[in-house]
Length: 183
Image 1 (cartoon, one colour):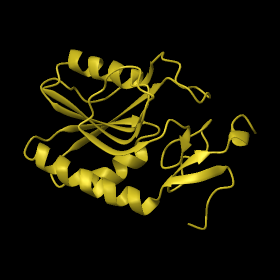
Image 2 (cartoon, helix red, strand yellow):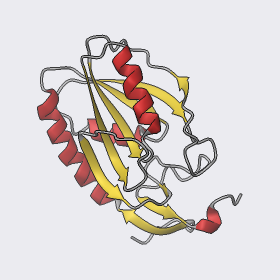
Image 3 (cartoon, helix red, strand yellow):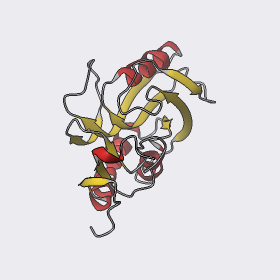
Image 4 (tube, rainbow, N blue to C red):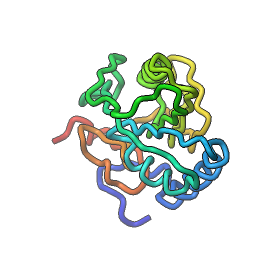
């Protein structure tokens, strides 16, 4: 890969690997939800790339809704305090819900969302995540579909950011330490 951003220490997952994995996940999700018309919940901002590409590989009817939650601010570690910035427009009562995340690290934000959606009366709730940060979980999370397990390092690209930068990189990479906090 020749176009590596200068703030990237190394590429963990290439654009080609991401596409292949999302295609595989989409086929499995298709079979699981065939005839159920699930609500795909995109957790913004990071998961927008994952949802956009993943849903193209799901060959059954789905609805998509968006939610913005925050637990990072401009830090590289989750604060553990979840704040809903934008809520869903769709009722989840008696609906099958697929929560799509870019990354599962501590699991605190996702646990909050799963409890919240269950309280709204969802018929079922499943999780699909592009990345699972190994060893970072503070609580037990059950994700039915996980694309890649990655080391416990701060990653950027493919929707993942540091201080709102780097989301548009087509791959997932580890940010250089000197880029953290640099303006």
